[in-house]
Image 1 (cartoon, rainbow, N blue to C red):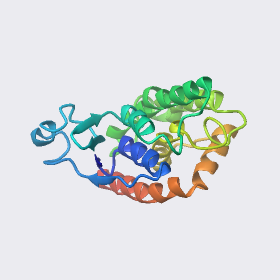
Image 2 (image 1 turned 135 degrees about the vertical axis):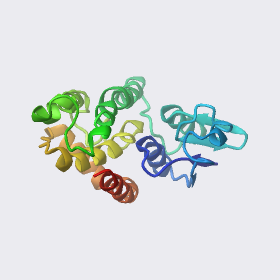
Image 3 (image 1 turned 60 degrees about the vertical axis):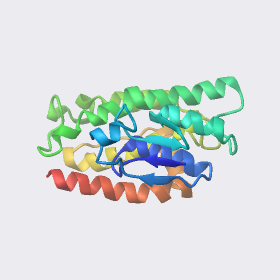
Length: 215
């Protein structure tokens, strides 16, 4: 079993975190011919990363891969046992993919200029990230310390990469990000977990190098 991934892809890191939490040693490979190349599309028609290869089975899209790994390797469990908890974990995963990460991605093209999209003077609020963080504060488990309860779930796998990107963009755009109580507690819990930090250290370096290459 191996994973087509790129070092900068936050969604690739999302899958790598889930696999590491399950104790799976995924072989990580660069897309043949490069990301979105014809050679890679011949293997993965969507042309996206990450893509999981399990024998003759090939699966794209990070959320789908996470669900597959959860079904294929049910222990340790990364979805709560109760239906509501499982729904909450899936909801928070969608919140990241649809409401949080796209706000960050929209700023990537402006890294060279140092002025985020829309009104640079309005900073993080104009980029829509402040609203996404406010929503996240309302939706996180009030007790925690993780997104849905006392142990990591699939809901915790995507956000670390996006937080690393946000941390790196903050000085670029002159943002001052204020993290609320639940989000702060959650970030601290992930920072104290060896699996998250073992993968986030190299990822932060990759993000910093990418930003430097654009300036």
